[in-house]
Length: 401
Image (cartoon, rainbow, N blue to C red):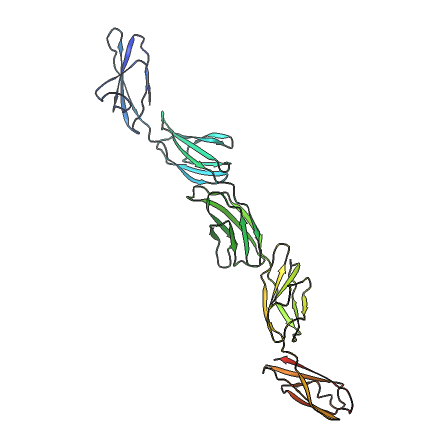
């Protein structure tokens, strides 16, 4: 508090008495304070305290003037500044209200968007267009009627630039999102819209990537990523990552299954440019097709194969559609235990109970057209009505139920 009074030319000095006495004035409470100037700055006062100040002049002649008495109540303590949010390009601060405040005068160093001085009647200050990773000092004074509080300052650092993320390994129900680490970031948060199939929408992350799964096929997603410091003193601006999951691969079907081959077919899927087929156990390198069917003929008899088909697009691969199928047993071994002029006996090896046999002959004996082809579960048969010294061709194949 600064106290001033009129100058008296004949004064030798002035005498000052302050009650209650500030600690900054030398001497005891019972002693007066003498000074030559007509003003004094009183410091180390107590907030919201009424002080009585008495001043008189001692003239050169030795006489004294009448006393001048004034009372003044000091201002409250300055507002406390609270940092609510520090982002990359903005910050939000609030400060404790001071009763009877006319306005709050605020200084920001360095300036924000070229502005360093702010005036507010509310207890809120939003700083827009802050620069990334910059230390700012905010100083505030509450202006009351005829007086002002002391200043109070708060220093904070704005957040670093936001992450820049990109997707890889895009599938029908999953994707991996990567970004460069943000210095001094303690964790990251990802918010995904729409939520995953299990309802997850907000994910805390402690690495510089996230593997999203349980997504819906052929769906557009919007994911917001932020980095947060160890004590949440700052949060980067939002980075929005947009992506679409791959379509769902169509079902794989088989036909014409034999001991060493089968035909594979599937429906065309939009956005897919090529199809990859993988076999377990392996039958060689993966097969790539742009058509919608594939004949495979280098398989082992009576073997269960797991076949996976994967659709490949411009920037994705679908989840695999998997199918398990057995190849047929090996071709039967045929014997002719008895051959006559007009008949012969055939026999062949047996197969599991869920198979039956189709037996055919060429040329078909006259008068026996209704017999052929023969469907039987037996492993022996006698062919009748044959011509002597004639060549016949027999085919036998097993068919599963």
